[in-house]
Image 1 (cartoon, rainbow, N blue to C red):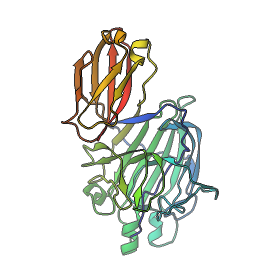
Image 2 (cartoon, one colour):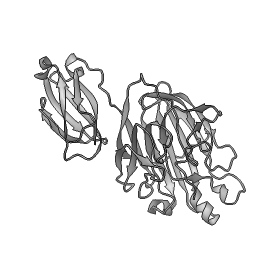
Image 3 (cartoon, rainbow, N blue to C red):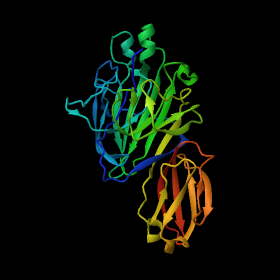
Image 4 (tube, one colour):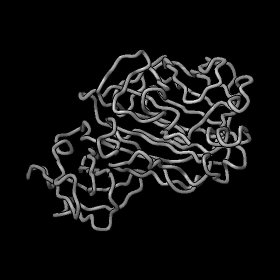
Length: 345
């Protein structure tokens, strides 16, 4: 078995002036539609750890940074054996951190790899809609699994899925189509995963991957949990228990995580401290504005409301909260609101 992280990664150099973004996770059911035509990204290659470049045709914001190209890069670090340096597909060395999106995590491969006759698992790219609201769709058709092929020289397990990227909103969706029963049952070496990393950088001496923020899915595919984390070892791959049934859609919607522009000065003038916090946090705000605050709310990453306070509380208690990232929303008497991100240690 290869020491491997996901087959797919998307890169974007971090741009510090852009608004910070986080993501809220939901699910939906929608009939899976296999797309025809499009650009054949994989060509006639019998791919394993592919090294492809896909121009999006529009700008997509990933963690607020503009992304106009998708990179499958398995040869120089992520998606293949981890290294301490990164070289992009053009061979240009960079030591910059990147934002990364992993669409499946478990090591996929063309099913033709089992017999080396011909390619059987095309990867295609499609654009639908018109600007500024286009959707870029990357489709894996009849993809196999490297572990099964390497062990048995056979490829009986397969998966079909699509990654949708929304131009205007930055929304991300993963649509799941037909899969073999082994995938649906969670056979080892087939379980899917999804992960997002903000400002990823390469392993340190203690073999811990470095990043500012990380998010992944865990648990059963019909009711996954969206979890934030701040440390990950090379071999700690976050996977779901099993593959989603056809028609399942995982949705990752953008949520601004720094204070947002507000329609009045009241909502724009608050800070939370300490942040990160352990036991609780406080609100700092000009005294002249305090009486105009209607409520303060705390949400988890799924958008679920966890607690509400009328006005400004002396302290927001966090003892019952898990470690992770939360969203704090303050709403004024005029209906204006602003958000901030809270990290609970």
